[in-house]
Length: 507
Image (cartoon, rainbow, N blue to C red; front, top):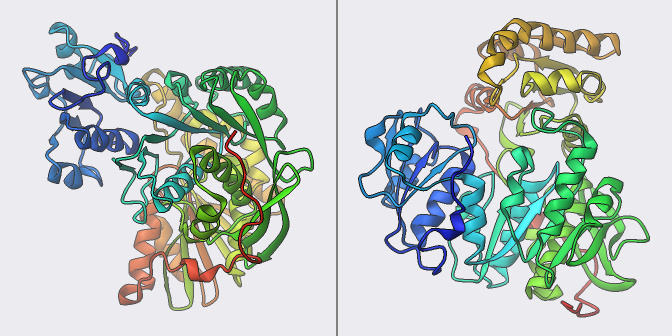
């Protein structure tokens, strides 16, 4: 389904006043769609929506006055709707889409809605194959703590930030910007970031060159008087950034980067570091969330925040208090000496760096991983890389593939290859000298682990599907009333050294 109008031409977006605009959202239950619904409602729009099943944010949206229907029917489209927004997953045969076309109601995609919202805000768009949610959340935290009251839509929940979206009184709209379906090309941000570029989403890109080309178009869409922040240690990101009309500032660990992290000090997987800008010392700070990769993410957030008007002192004070976003190496609970973690990782690179961070942070006696591959095409394309990714693990339990977004025409093929795909992955892992087990149904994982794990062990569920249900079940079994969530706080990290040594110009 392709959008039929340019959302920025809709009355309300052209004037910057959305009060009274009636918007119906098909597929409102997705993380991005529900976040955008909350932003629209916060800006005064009258919002309704539908989805095939109940979802986490449903009651929060209903409490804000959003009318939500479960299931799809032509009667769900309100009589006086000004605009219909459809998730990318909504097929052209959806009865609500058909009704909207019949009544000639303007229809746009979710990504175009965000692009339209950027037309009435100063957009901050964070793109990259990995790290978008965490870095977007980090930006929101820095802006909030610095008194800039941003609006935001990110792809993961954060209790600390107030959810996956929010409406602030400040001028900025911070958006996690996904390359899937080239969605991020609808954005015209003032500030942008490219965190990294790798091969992924081969259901809509031919190869890495085509992905780089799309990121190059994203770079070119950053306002000429704005700023593009780019990972200078990533050659593909640098190629894409060459298309930018805006100023480009590079971040990373290499000596040629504009923003550098130096003197890294690791304490149980969490880093303290000094920040330099073009050889000038800026600040000493640290992170409450583990992983060296998050230092690179933090540099991008710092560069964006400085250009937006925050001072190094604001950032140095706020950054150690950022607690991360949901399903990014999240501590789900501890009990009986067993620690249960959950993570969204579903790409070989994400799995590798997440495991490195988890092992450093928790130093387990044994690490157990429950991995749910995401999409048949991705599993086949990265089979060899997946088989090499699970280092330092006692045993990896591989569940059936979560095939979201796969085309209907490939369902039969997907069903026939589901067992073969996961089973083949287990076979390859075992041939590489790793312990792995194929357990097709998630319901069978918990009973197996209950018999295997012991005090001092860590269990990590990984994947973009519903594998988190295993983590929740394990928490109930092992932790009970001792359940612990998000115990990491800003007091856990003490930044290196003292205050800021230099004020960095936003120019």
